[in-house]
Image (cartoon, rainbow, N blue to C red):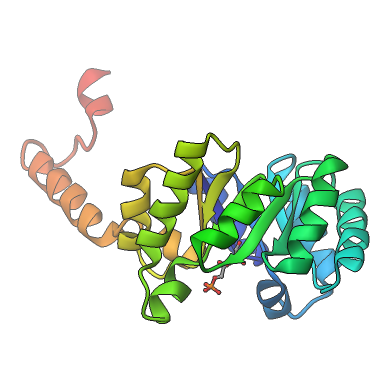
Length: 226
Ligand SMILES: O=P(O)(O)OC[C@H]1O[C@](O)(CO)[C@@H](O)[C@@H]1O
């Protein structure tokens, strides 16, 4: 199962890469706009840092032919392991089908229902990205929706994987990790909260204090073993 960073801030991305085993970066227009810089430079910096890992970039056009043009230019600029995020609506499905035929990696995004995901799978998308928290906010069940999509993949033998998105807490993520899907994308903030260091630090501190009672000069096992 892949873990992807849903962020456009290079410092956040560097920090998460330093400490955790992650598989790439997703962005969307809102994330890029938040950086307040030319999106090309933001994405270039991310691509240079993550090397050949997955980078997901969303198109802004609405018509299929324009989406296709935009997608080709994005792939040319940011390389092969770039996934073109395309909204899962009628124009989007049309563009997906054509781009997949050209060998372009497609991530079908803005998924709120299993039927959208099914149509994206039929169009050949590599990933479908259901919005867990946004579905919850509508009064539906985001986790149930993702599980239903995974069942569609399994029972029909589609090659598409789920890239579950829009998480606000660890519990939402954990349910899907336990269920087993293709990938999760979470902001640096949500990933940081996967582990609450304060409890761990307290436990580690207590061990060190107990050990010091043995001899307050010798601090680590190296002092005893060398
Ligand atoms: O509800 P949010 O946190 O804006 O999430 C929407 C999500 O969809 C995506 O666009 C799908 O990849 C992510 O970049 C983003 O996390």
